[in-house]
Image (cartoon, rainbow, N blue to C red):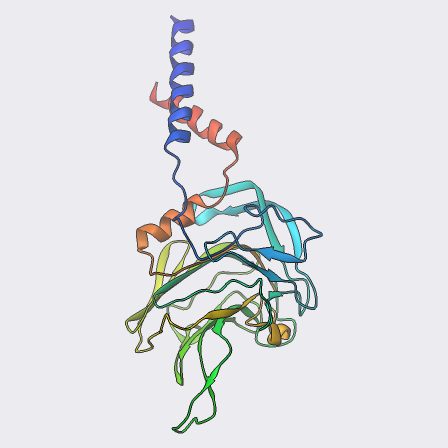
Length: 300
């Protein structure tokens, strides 16, 4: 009887594992930008970070190159742990990936509503100034012909700053169209986005043009703010920076690590964001086996 029970349990375990693999959930498809060193099989000698998203292309190293690291990423808040993860770390100012204006290999995207997702870790205080995580903007700029800001660039831009002391607070998120700017200063809000230091977290920013800016931490909404800023998808977004806002502003390097950076050309739903948060890392098969085995034993 005991041998029979073990046999039944073993068959059930194998069936459960096969089923879990067959019905494994994948991240939301077709981001226009998708930077993930595991997906693009980055090597330490690579001087560019290749885009696995639909826009193609790559971002070149800045004056310095972020360090490619391999190891374990764990996000206790959502019960996710991967022992086969990889990420880039900026060790000093100007360790960035960013393209210059004339870079023909840079991705070009067109955005109206959009979603930015980041799996990141803050490592300490700022290197030099401003501490920017990423930037997307139009270039070349067309000057404004009249008004109080005549001669200024007519641009669309999104940037994220961290607080200067590196404590893990998203200080503000700047989204601008022409001369209209919406800067959401989270550091002064009760629902400020604190992602801690030396902790891995998912951050998502969802922009619905002319409607709202919604921010999520590990799949949970922490901020929703109305906005009148509207974006025109006709503009080429071809200036990109990771660990900074742009190639010309490399000194604004974020003292952080980034494992995954995605941009979608639409506003993802909360369910889609949770799908990405929970299904973007390869989970250790041994861990899956242990969890499944324990569950099966309890059920029998």
